[in-house]
Image (cartoon, rainbow, N blue to C red; front, top):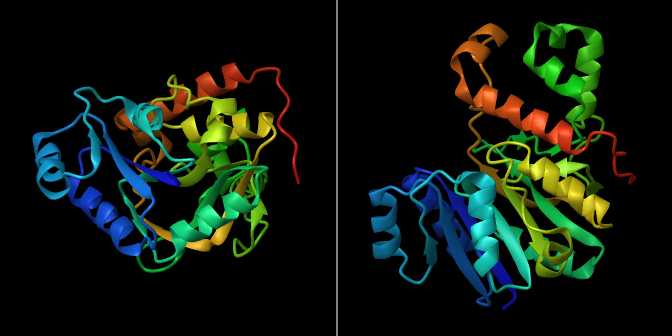
Length: 269
């Protein structure tokens, strides 16, 4: 089989349905499978999958196994030589899958290739980043981020130094939509399950680089992304006191920095 499409889902069957339908409508070949890997499965999601998509492999989970858990479950049963991982809040545009697949097939040194993400009003949505440093977290989470030196650091982190309309090697790319290959995964391994939410994509991309694979941003392929910034509060005090996702993000950051303590950043262009 040429391609396995793994769609990760969490308590949003309405968006999941739109995602699945966009894949089926906008893919031009038949040698593929769809796997929906769901976390903390609710009855309405399971009923929808059984009634509307009996041909799709549906992996339910009683527990909230996190993004890495849903991806890994899908990877373990996937049959495709290439793997497309999509969040359930992605809507695929015409030819996007074909462009990603053609690129990774023609460039065997590429381990991950990802499309340009768009908001629903067609505006550009940032999805490419340089690797975190501890200062990145401090500047994003405290009032220090308002100073010019911090803004310069964060602009570098967000890769604001290129137009995002050209193909580019990047440190890491948002896990909402990315394509990889079975061969690369066999060398790199599955996602690290200690990162249940946040940093799983950062960590995975870093491991691809460490194993000699490139991570590529391909803006010629485009997809819509309904991206809710759940861990961002109105201000740092309110965020730290009331937003559980903020604490999860910080905890994942600590795990990430401990994991890579003393290791050099992977080097590329």
